[in-house]
Length: 123
Ligand SMILES: [Zn+2]
Image 1 (cartoon, rainbow, N blue to C red):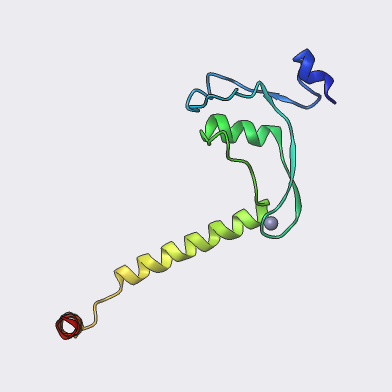
Image 2 (image 1 turned 180 degrees about the horizontal axis):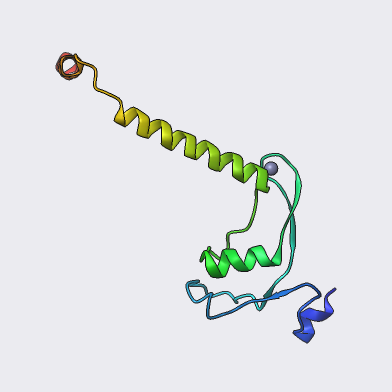
């Protein structure tokens, strides 16, 4: 298991890294010569998952991910979070696009006045 480290040869199933594609990474540390599958436990649900060498190459070289960033959530949990964010974005867009209440100006003025009077009461 340790031999390939000293021999400099890539282990079985490794995907070669392209240092040119990693030029966005500004680090004093060494850049990887290749990627290997990394098993991990999902931070949210505890499922055992593998971050494959090909996925790592995509993340670091195509998506220009940070070299210290590693996969911590399984695919299902990442999809769930993505859905939640999308739903929230759609909700906020719908709220922003909704018709104004006819008395909104009145309520805004009232809120402004009440916050001003509370400030005045304190001083
Ligand atoms: Zn999970």
